[in-house]
Length: 91
Image (cartoon, rainbow, N blue to C red; front, side):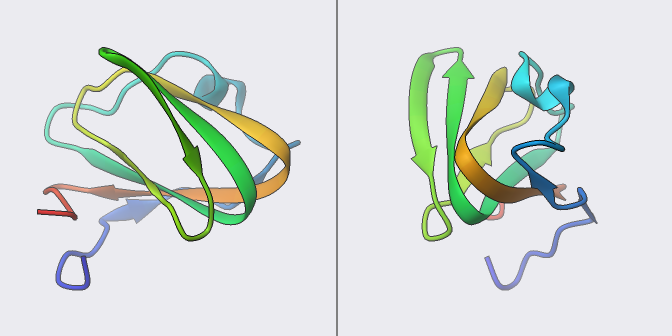
């Protein structure tokens, strides 16, 4: 991942400032990968197609592929940020 840099990053969100849009079903655009980085605490990443869940931690980021429907749920106090890439950062 060191060779691939994000073209945009969200602000850092905590459990109170996490936008409702990220807590509800959404997806990235065509050709856009998202990497959800947990800076503190834990976050549940729910993929909708196919259905599955991942527990994200500072040691375990989450990858969202282009147009993949998903949403996130904070688990207690947390801080997170999303980096956006125009190619797969984990080839």
